[in-house]
Length: 181
Image (cartoon, rainbow, N blue to C red; front, side, top):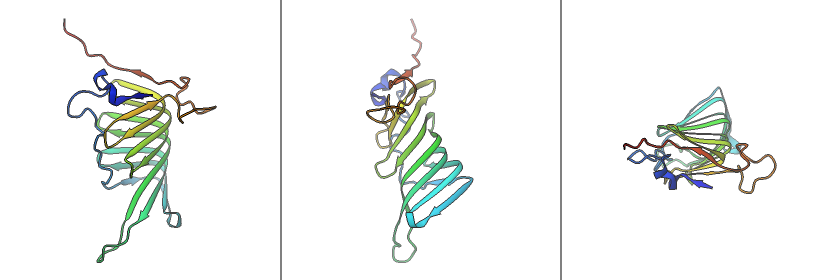
């Protein structure tokens, strides 16, 4: 397991105010989406969106071929109708998460809005500028801004579970600043 929080000095997460662009992401901000098709499944408290799906929230963008949004109906506050509170978004098919200069990609992703975690599985990559990490699983903590990359898509692995074809290993490329002599 390779933790990007520990690699800040190594170059993937740059020093400075914007070093961890996903830190303190506002998971309570409104969630907006566009898609080619939407299917509301009220009895199951979910919405299925498909075809060029794009979800935006507080400067973060999530793209995928298909997403399932699990929600809860909130009761009205006396004078008005209640609302919908999103608990989780499951995305599949060329999933891309972007905020500022950080981009994460994978086969599938689970965005748990309550725990403020995004877990991506299968052929994951995390890039910032010219720095890049690849592996099988990526977990992004939106509270701390810390990202963790594992070599295998699911803990112990198994046939067909290795994410990047790297034998369950994480690989990376980091830019080294040019030193002046």
